[in-house]
Image 1: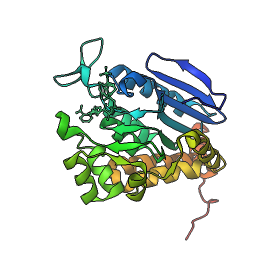
Image 2: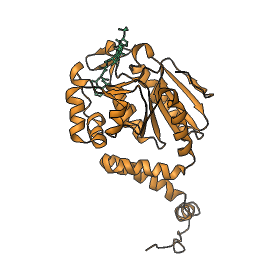
Image 3: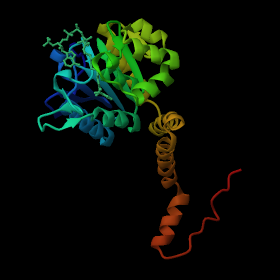
Image 4: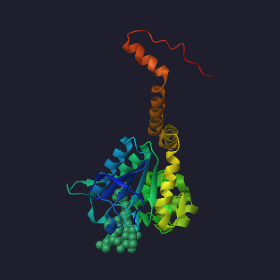
Length: 274
Ligand code: S0N
């Protein structure tokens, strides 16, 4: 799928493309010959790119996608699946995609899955954990675990069930059927369906709308949506953001200044809101 936008490469990788345009970072799996199945190396690169996008102050939104127009991602590369995980060049079995899922969930910037073609298996879970999913009309969604001898009982099951409901999530996993873009829209699995040739244009338009909004409000909302579902870890994320906001206040600054100036802090001037 040819891009009509002047994406600038941020860093060169072996198995992904990582680029920047107008406040947006795009992470794209670049293994179209394998329907963008991921290896430990792919995931390592995506993980590093995600962290770079987090730290980059120009970036307000991240797009996750796959090259080629035929697949977003077809999950773990079955040809290198060994005992205990997916085996890379160092011969160590890994399931490092689970760490990437956490990263997508925790990064305080919206992540949008831009899905053309197959989002299958672990690739399906990747779109599920993104904040929003925009699908091309050729998109197909599904889990394959019980068919190929695996399962993702983490976000792949529990968060999926929060998105589409318990009955539908069990159907998706127990039957391993594929669902087209319209079916995905109908079950609330994606936010919008567009013709393939408009996928990038619409995704960028959504990004631009998000980029016009308050970054802290977006950050707090993402943490708040997570907090309800993520238990203590979710509260920790939301509380961390509350601390960030508190640090920005004169009241917090008074505590720090008093310590550094070796005096008693004077909090009396700060309002005691009802
Ligand atoms: C995606 C499908 C439906 C596309 O079908 P299509 O268009 O007919 O193309 P194919 O001819 O099948 O594929 C083209 C070439 O790409 C290779 N290929 C496709 N997918 C994979 C893949 N996942 N791994 C390796 N190779 C792949 C094909 O082999 C073909 O190559 P050539 O031309 O050389 O023959 C269809 O391809 C399909 O069904 N793919 C497999 C989907 C699948 O089962 N994925 C794995 C599911 N499991 C996971 O993702 C596990 C994820 C994980 O890491 C995990 C996380 C948490 C807990 C547990 C796990 C765990 O590992 O279990």
